[in-house]
Length: 417
Image 1 (cartoon, rainbow, N blue to C red):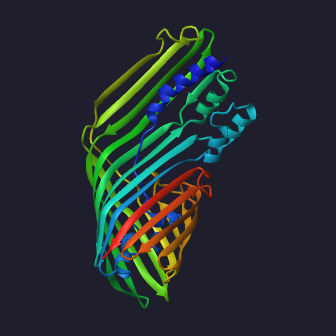
Image 2: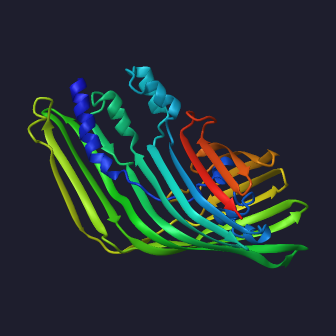
Image 3: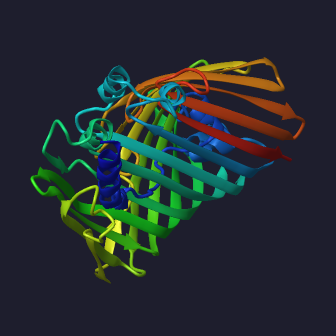
């Protein structure tokens, strides 16, 4: 029985894993965004405004020359099991209660995985203008719940299987972003500031699965099954992006802000576009004959047509109180369509920054909704003269490192002259 289960598992995973791909990031992977669980439209000033709301570059102009020497961020997570379950069950002999407990956490539409990564180098800010170069990569994949049912229980209780909720999409690349903010006009007795972030995007790799399916049946002579996966890949493209922002002081120390993300965000993929197909099938497969090459596989690849793909548009709106040692803000964000790391489920976040002493800013935040469900963020900085080091972390559906269902972290090093 154990041999049959191992055989079934290996056959199914061999067919299905081709649909897991890597993709591109939507939210800034900066210490401020992660440490406040997503509140960057209002709290982001100075160089952080270039990654948050560009209108803040005009409203909170910083004197002198500011340089972000390096900024890096990465994250991983899923919608089902967390790090605590992984530590508990990894390497253990699972009984029926353990299997039922794990399966109860996998939604009916399957397990969704995510990976995120981002890096910035030599971001510059001077007189309301900013230029920064970024690299990005994110992964999104989905696996049918029946895969895990088969993995845990074998095919003894069910003779036919159909794995349809399996898919993946990904994009990786780099961009150069020019941002500027300034006063637009006076409205309701206050100055209204506007800003833009215009980017040239260089796509490095894209992959998306199309039709993906796999079936398995228990028959009198053994196991029979088949799998089909279609996906498109590209190895280069060029595009442009545009973000717009507004900001206005609405009272002593109070600010309101609005950002339209990805008003334009399109990459035309033209280099080495390929339409790929992978097929596999086997009949009357048993423990006794599984070494007899009964699994027949076919892989084809043909040139594909150029296509355009980018990040979905999104809206962020927030309000906050900005002080010298204590700032707090709340923000609402929603994407106008699903895709590439963002969700049409609205998210609400609130975060604060507190400096008990000038050289030690502390951050804390929480969010609900969106792709993560709910998250807790925390971080800290260190100001030593012209040098500033910042760190931030966000835990999805958890509080501490090692808990929750996902974790993202970021670090940046700035220099002000």
